[in-house]
Image (cartoon, rainbow, N blue to C red; front, side, top):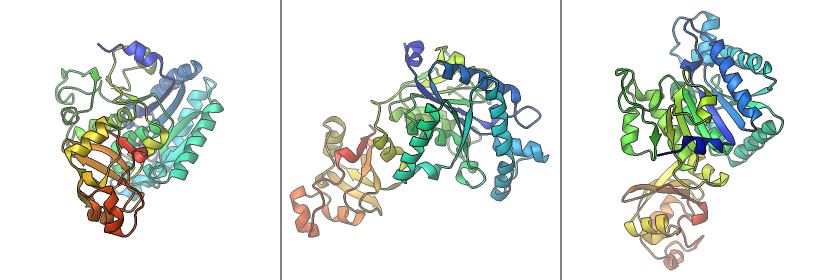
Length: 375
């Protein structure tokens, strides 16, 4: 039995992501009642000394209402234009609500690219968030819809929120949506579908419950929320999916049995290892034998060329690669050699590298210090 009160009592930093449906009023536009309720709960959490980051969707819905549009545009350029109008309305609604509680807000516009691949930009963003926390400001993160494309089409900010949780070293990611949590069934069709209260590990069976890509239930809905939960739990944090209009943040943090709680899968990762595992684009894959898999998972070893059985993709030295064993993906890390070089040395001993290549950068294909174990 999981003691939620004990787990959530020690949460010092959290990221709250609010979906479009939660923020949209029945008549369209921004639901001011929901915004006020969020402001009340988040202000109280900040008053307890907790650091809170709010990731908010809703710019497009707000823009549609302002422009009198009855249906969501399909063209990306039109969506971007509507978002440009709605973004200002959204942040103003938050500013008004939080002002009543004496909490200043600061808008941070991001796309996934802003926190992927570029280590310097990533570190600059961490410093910005730390300064906002120090000044007592609530960071409100919006996807930059007026320039982004992928974020508009998929995910409704879920994956972005997971990256932000890693960026700010959050203990908990709360995803507020339109259903009570992850269900053992489709709640859109079966109102009696049972909510799974605790997920110990995101298994293929759990991912299947979230819906297949492209399904009405899964695409951009529960599927991406489970993907977001998988990212933060693999980093050693918790995630929780709850109903944004029926569940209060104050009750969630008090440990009430609301929504679905995803437990951390590993010890907390360092910021650098989180960046390697989840913020870099995977350029290729290294397939390894069972001996190398055991050495990486159970004995804390680096990946040597002798354990590599195959190479997929084209990558250069320093690129992030997935490491796949007989049981599936077991780790990610920075390659010490290019794909072409690994193909030439795979299956061979480290002392043979110089004879095979004419030079040697390292004895390891991926060094342990630049590796994140996911198994």
